[in-house]
Figure 1 (cartoon, rainbow, N blue to C red):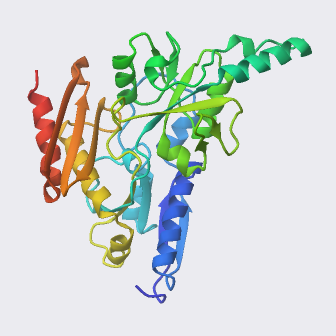
Figure 2: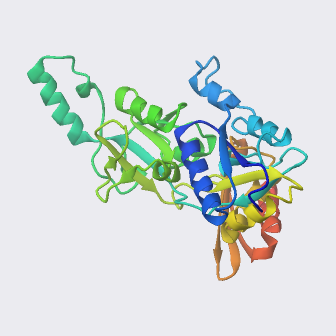
Length: 344
């Protein structure tokens, strides 16, 4: 790579989280190749447009490639040289001429339950009585510090846009009501703070981390332009298995772009890449996309990939796990998909 070539263009969505991820990749690129010029372009996807649109059909299945298609078109039209994705949003079957060129080191893979702090609400309700204003705080439910989702409010209404999360929540807590929510991270947090009909919200820990939010040791959510009085509980993978590719950043490129290949070698985190290859192979074997109610999580232990998987297809809970050599990542995914497909 040399500076005489045109700038390398990085395509990204325009949400705060997407920009944070793209800027992290941009910083890596500039550090690895200081002599090369890099630029970013922001592309609005179908998913971005739907996030702000009213939902005519709540709960309707969303199309594949919701947050990726327009970025892929930019790659194929040579308007961009690489596209930065939350890997969980990237379909397992890519358009002809494109490939997954690199995968960044995985962040915290866990999901997080966000909820209102009971003590904060009590203080606000007392203040409202003094001010004789509308008793909005007193109409909301909150909770103190908890160690598990099993300890959360009875009959709680939890918001999530994920069928995977919904299925696992209801398996743990059949008394919950799970409703759909859309919007960026800050918008969702504001909805939780404002709407009495919501008791909790599930988001990815990695997304919160990349937006510089902090979960304090006592469970308070801090940082950024977020509503006061929110608490957070990290859900261990034993409670809620993450979705395929969760917490990893994927770099999509043209399949035979020799100029970008050296860059991808520097950006790629080998262990994470192998793990998500196994997970994405599993998802392909299950015939699903990012909204399919399945989950899989792979880690490398003693030079082997260990993967756990769960399926809620046909409203039947099926689990599987397996270990294979690192070089057999794809085969491990295929193996667990086949096991779940034939399980009774």
